[in-house]
Length: 115
Length: 113
Image (cartoon, rainbow over all chains, first blue to last red):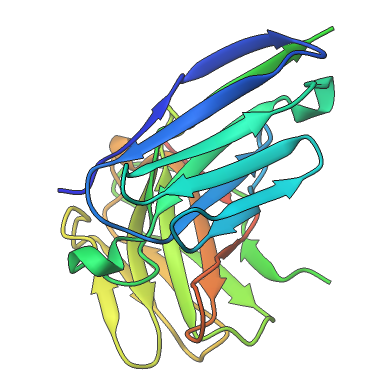
């Protein structure tokens, strides 16, 4: 069974600080997604990572993918309060015999940025 | 313009009832999905459907059934509702060509009493 593990699950940080969220998965996949969810809201796509070594940046967030290590990271630079949300990684298991698009989600990292 | 929409936004019902949640996408996507998010915020795929096949997560009870009247709609029917069905249900869609980046609807909060 494909497993997707995120850590930490809860993260409280001060504005201006840097931190990294980790996403490990248990089988080969070269398709990984990061989503953001605000309380009571839907999921917003942040990054789509499609190959080993892929790195994408948007504002204070940067995501990377190492398919050999089966690891993705979401790095937060100089956090601001507006980044407070829950962040999910999701893996496409299609090259594990799974169906393309039937994403397997991590449990989410609840980020709280305090002034 | 809303890309993926769901109705209703909130649904409160009693155990044993049958209910439906509707989903529509205006993105021209080929594949639609239903996800369940439980009280701990854990997201799990329930179904994916395009005009070629329906893929069902084996853990989904057969009380749940997706119905697609056309390519832009995928409705979720739930029979004999149970307390454990209380959750937020998200619809999503993606294109078949290229990586399946999924666009999510606003969610339907189902409460079974």
